[in-house]
Length: 373
Image: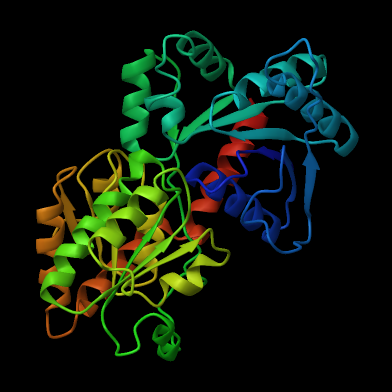
């Protein structure tokens, strides 16, 4: 198949999933065309059968903001016609599904079906804004196929938008051959020279991720045992997190790594992953950590309980409860095996449900179903 994929190319879950999906599809012999305003952040290497088409938006004095939705629709139909695409797969409803709908209309009478994958804030935040709700509902209902990344998000979409159509749940996934515990443990010494436990966090540092709670949890752990914290990612709350680190005199124990390529190489070195988000529709970073044999402490919200099993491969805590987070972190890290047994279970459970080898065929089957309609 020839598939056009549109996503936000930034450091967020929807863009990561879309990019990894394209890479996996290309590896299985499909031709993938990414259509976006910038190269997706995880598309760092040349891949056979993967192409990138940049959406150029011209600024006009008449417009306060460049008309990206229209420029994207124009690029979609251009790529569809020149590359003979079979379908478009857009990730994140706003504005991508609207652009895909316009492209499909422009392609008529030829068929150009499009699938919308819902990822989270396009439904729980953006889509539920009064100014966006009608167009979001319309673009979802007009899609030739709709998927969501979790059962939680599917139910939330039905509730918030009163959608009548079917929504297929195809979960996020991880390449279990890439995400695994690192065999070279000496690489830990760049952070933990004395082999202290290493706690980790990975996100886009938006307020919803509550990165300040990550630091607060670590500070309470550090009061009891030597430990290090590795923070991967960047965003608006980085400054607040760095301030707490300085205030608590933890600068020698916390490492802000910024945006990282090949995060699997870093995750494979950690002992415990922290994800105290205010809301997560799935929790892709938690899954990547679990595949890397790290137990996870996350909040009991959204789709996270579908990924992390409390007391089995990690713990679920209430939002903002840094005391509970620290308690469970210490409970894991002070075990004789430093949580290794729980980490092994985390990988077993990740492999059982979310390996790309099992999830990608679900997308392929869904593509065929939509094309056959």
